[in-house]
Image (cartoon, rainbow, N blue to C red; front, side, top):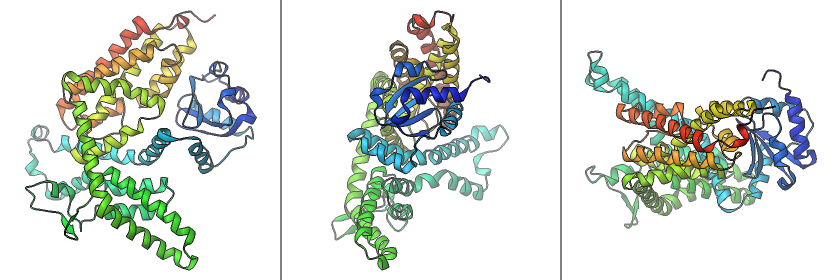
Amino acid sequence: MENVNYQDIASQIVNIVGKDNIISATHCATRLRLVVKDNEVIDKKQLEKVPLVKGTFFNAGQYQIILGTGIVNKVYAEIEQMNLKTLSKQEQDAIIKGQQKGIKRLMRTLGDIFVPIIPVIAATGLFLGLKGCVFNDNVLALFGADSSMIPAYIVTLVNVLTETAFAFLPAIICWSAYKVFGGMPVIGIVLGLMLVSPALPNAYSVADPNSGIGAVMAFGVIPVVGCQGSVLTAILTALIGAKLEKKLRKIMPNALDLIMTPFLVMLVTFLAVILGIGPVMHIVELKLVQIVELLIHIPFGIGGFVIGATYPLLVITGLHHTYTMIETSLLANTGFNPVITLCAMYGFANVGTCLAFFVKSKQESVRQTAVGAMLSQLFGISEPVLFGIQLRYNLRPLIIMLCSSGLGAALLSILNIQSNSYGLAVLPSYLMYIYEWRQLLWYFLVSILSVALCFTLTCMFGIPKEVLTADE
């Protein structure tokens, strides 16, 4: 691998795609992303013969070439030296959004909103897991202590670490969504903070009949409460605020724009949401959470199988960001996230696919692809496996992976296993279950079973004859 000529690989890619066909080039952790004039003129088969190219696909308005972690940076660096016409990220995003319609555009928007906040939610989940371990009486008993001996100030500081992100979740989402919708982010975060202002009755307390706290009645008929845990309300607040802001800035005199535009945006948006949209959206969101929980708990793990077997298909089509919104709602309203537990099994099944191709293939290029894809998958990046192996060599490896993922998810559903966070996959995902030893143990065992099942079935039925022939 040290002798790889990345300049030659970059040249081959550009020549096959067509230098004049490329509008702009960027990259992510594993993929070279090209905005092209016409993806139909690209010879996909010829492109996949280029060394280190593990697969290609067109999605989200981009022609995406799977290269792998580290490799993509080096190839992109060489492409930058070729004097291609490139656009800024904002210009490229505008082109992509213009090409996308309907559900794909919605999924991209949701992805743009939630991807920036995933690290914060994942980190909070780790804090919760560590708190569950350190504050556990069984663990403390090993050191001759118990939870009553922990000083109050430590409990307070730990609670700040574990509760802040979820207490102000609508503010975080509103800030991110406001940026996506093109408004001034500081207005978005203030609007989000208004939704969970301590001056408003807490939504969770109002819902608890034993709390003694009721809604404030506006005009004697409209219940006014905070929007704690309401993801949909936060997104709609940002949408309304950003759209109103952009309209006002077009008509507001320059001398008044600095003060009057934020004033009117915050006033109109807050009143519209808190008096009308918020209560309705919170009810809709709770019903959505209930539907998802019912699906997960369908007897005999049927619901878990459906989620586990279909989630990889959502990843392939780019529709998986829908689940992020549902997971966020579940975490905010229940404190747990069973959805990611079921979805996570496909990552382990992918590891089984890579191991099978590495063991059975007699072609060095395929073995290298399998190792690289597995290393990426171990830390949650699945595209090299999906596009470099499962969709590349007929559909049998993909079907086996879907079945293995579904069966693992079905078992977890029956065992009622659920994480306390999201955003972590495969190896890091174990950290989301350290809050309770039973959850961690069963998750670990089922994940290993998913790897073994997919590995065995792929070795038996999923290895294509073309990779069983040694390189000449």
